[in-house]
Length: 251
Image (cartoon, rainbow, N blue to C red; front, side, top):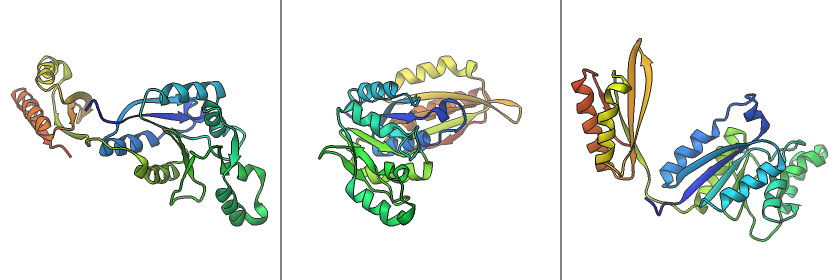
């Protein structure tokens, strides 16, 4: 597992930090990365402040195999992601010729500078435009940084278009055991189970169901057999506590 590619998501936009917009891209990207065997190690929400964006991009691209940014590549004044990515790489901003051509053809007489801003990318022959099926303006890749839109439908299309460029590791699998138990009643034994299965990440997630205490114990690993053994022990533990456990095998 230590050799698997790693990733970080940078969510860019004041609208997320203000609570005005709820991010939904992380769940999609995180799920897809797990399926591709890429370990998501960090997720940051960055304000529309150039220095903050540049610093985050430079710090994370030096740490992780891949960086995925979402947001800030639209037509308005606060869409500053591309300018900041260019600054982080010591580049200038240019209009991508083919994207500009498509935009002029699409908008015709409605073409303006604001719309053409969405054709901008950092300069350099290593910059790759990432086409998508959702919208005619693309995302792009520079180095190990993939720059994508914040609109969920467009972001998802851009991510899928970027998949062929990604190195993969062993896919992560996960399964769970759910039962009517209290976390405090299973904490010690769950710690012991985790120690017996170091290759499996085990998490405990409490909630209330039918006005009763309820816990979902989730096991994640690339080793399906180890997950099944760990879940079996969790199920036995919950049954001993009359927790009526229900096991969901790894998928």
